[in-house]
Image (tube, rainbow, N blue to C red; front, side, top):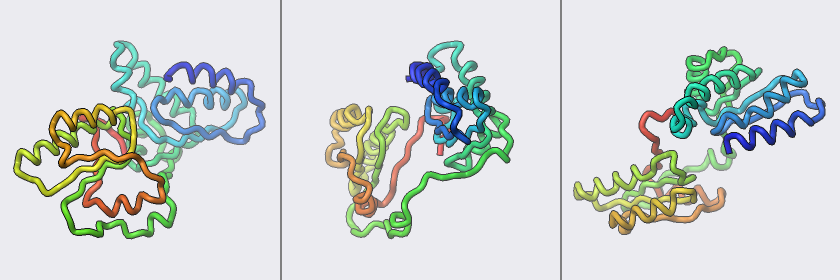
Length: 225
């Protein structure tokens, strides 16, 4: 994933005609996915715009630190990659500070471009409608990065403290979902935790209206939106 795309896509990009005025790439983990765009822009002297959706090297540190020489190499590559951009659009204002202090990117080359939702969604009243038990909601990708097991441990702690009138709902899918479901069963949380499949976007407002609070978790020390 980290290297095969970088190599194959860069080879492909070098064969493209110089017909484009500007190149747009987006940056998730890993930052190496920017490499084909960078090489194309270098070859044809075109400006590169990066839409930054994740922070490198911060976002890849958990993986690269397993090999002794990689963290420093990944840090230097990240700095070099960002420096190749004529403009970097960031999804969170906090990203701007990170890029300036960590990678020396001039603030004039950074713009704030948040991820969007349609006006129909933004204008809706998503407050909870029914006054029943307290509902906590996690909606999204259930991957390994966010440490969603923290929510299960917090649920267990609430029950130990005698708090009963609540429920936690996980909605969505992801690589960690099966593990989380098994963990919830082992911890005997079935009466207070449920897992649902993802739903179409147009149905999400009704899902949000069931919740008193939405949950977001991070690994210790992790920097993100």
